[in-house]
Length: 355
Image (cartoon, rainbow, N blue to C red; front, side, top):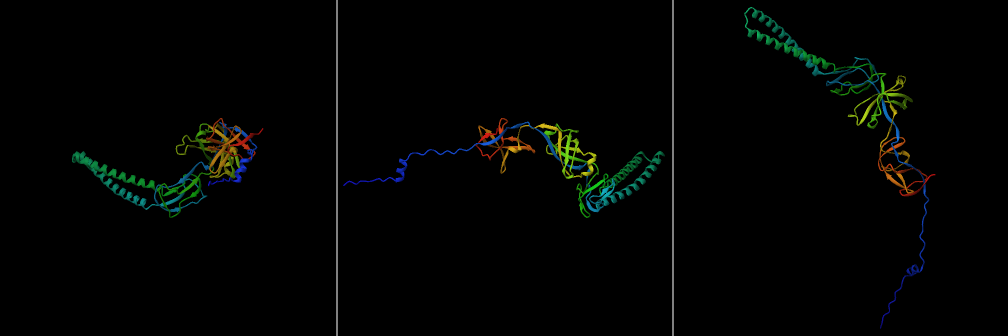
């Protein structure tokens, strides 16, 4: 007896096989209107710097002696005269050396007087043929030896007296005390700052000029200075600029004069912004407007226009100012960047140009 097998196909498969294929659904996205610009190359930018007001003569008061501070005779804000006593330091070691030097001087002076009398006596005896040449020579050597010891003692006392000036610290010039670091009873160490003072009336602005701007910046270069805290703005010139940046991280210290009519309204420590009017230089490399930059987390990029599409490029930037940013890597001079768009852009978005 033969067995008959039946295969049953699912109804769903049959219905698919019999139905006609549907047309593909396509979504049309309207192009985003954008404004483009070529990458800036060698854009002229006025050099802008920042600085602080400082006294032309400022001094850090310190000492070469170790000892406890016995007296501080001035306070912050006090006006002092040149040679006025500021700080007195007690040094028992120096006093001991002074007493030792005085004792050596007394001893050697007495011995020197005695040796001189002996030498004079032997000289007379030698003239009278009563003393030999050798005896006279020995007395002369003895006199010179004692004289040398006396001179050494005198020099020791001079040294002590020279060191005493570092225990009685005086003002180097007329000025004002701006900072007091040490107090009575503190231990003063050699080279340790004790207080700060500045000379009144002699003020200037100190700034740092970058290496790439150094050749165009010189003494006499005109500058516009603004001190916001005093609501001041004035024209001036660079008074002095250093010739080396060895200890200043590749930047050159410049000192800018403050006109006499403005000195009474500024004080040391005030912040100043400076524009060097005669130092417009062509920035090497590429520059893009700040408004075109796109930032995401720690990354900064710009959209590049190519074949009616926007492509996001991440950049490595150099110096920036209020208008432009220097591009170190990420763009070529032949690229065209998107300055603005009517809608938010995405990488690969279709764009159209504003007319």
